[in-house]
Length: 250
Image (tube, rainbow, N blue to C red; front, side, top):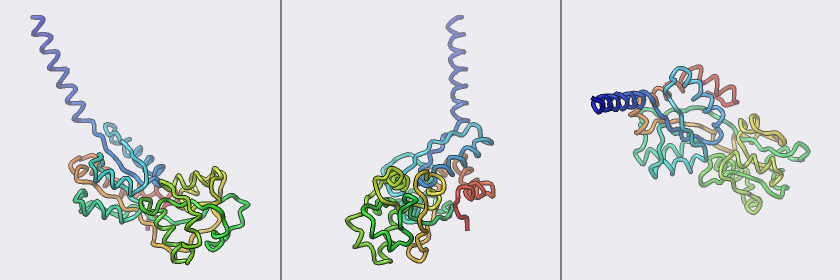
């Protein structure tokens, strides 16, 4: 009798565990570093009405994240800071191409200590060290290099540039005084800067518009909660959160 009771209890316990596992859902997000605060709040808001959903966030440079996904890293949604890395994953057949959309826009600024006498992009050549994201993997660095090249300053600055792993590291270098200034997104400067300030906005005609696409991966498309979160990102509530952090929606 005791064995029968124990066996029944074990079966019931396993069924309960399987039920909880079936109800719970982990959503893996790979997110451009500049979206950290916004996406953290978006996922928290979504979880309020989807209490069994757990988000696992991976923040970093868009290129590094895209390569991780291509190499098999778990990701249900990918937030990129430019279309190039989204296209990279499309060519790898890793995205649900029907569920890729423009998430937000941003702009590029130059930051430095308040007393720094820099007012235009031409003035940057007078500085000793300047931080940018590594153009090979960080969209902010690609935009910055594009602007410097169009302004005819890339050769003058090639020995002064300090490469960072992502846009947040650029800001950190400037905050610590390890560089004279840094090219970062306007949202990062507004949200995170404590010691440095925006010295000038990089003229938009010098670089492509900073565009953030978001895409559901093939693995994410098989998860109802991941697809629901993707749909939530298109709502007015989600757009309001983005605007609060300084992102442009249109």
